[in-house]
Image (cartoon, rainbow, N blue to C red; front, side, top):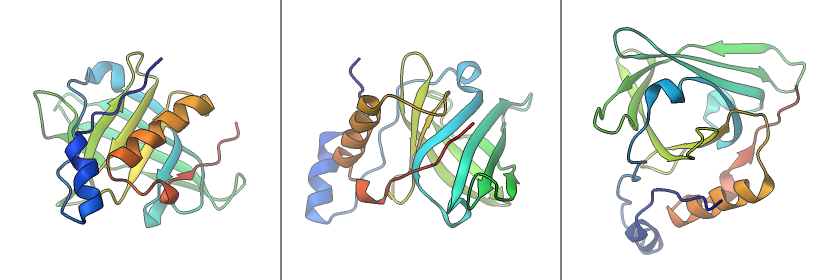
Length: 173
């Protein structure tokens, strides 16, 4: 299976020039009903909140008002660490693709959330940000094949991400 990230070639060129990177190109279309459910965080550039996360899972539910109820859970520090739970709300900002969301942890602020990769089976996805400061590689299972992981990293590097900053999230169930 060939994994393709929705990334314009110009982003890679501009990254080398030190110029501002354009927004990450998203997937063409996300079927929200198929996207809902549990996603294991395979790897990420962690936010301060996620540092030291183990068994991280992001769960989505489409609410009647069109927003996304989100539950993010993990163990802090190790597999036996304290369980953490956060409930941000997702707002779909691009209804033509459903691939650009605002994720709100604290009102009224929304963080950019761009679905830049989604395989045909809806079993692997990559969420990115135009700043290339954070990224999340997620799957429906706690592990993905190593070759898929490597291809995703290659695509992220081509998109202007510093892949040395991407850390695997320990998963043991």
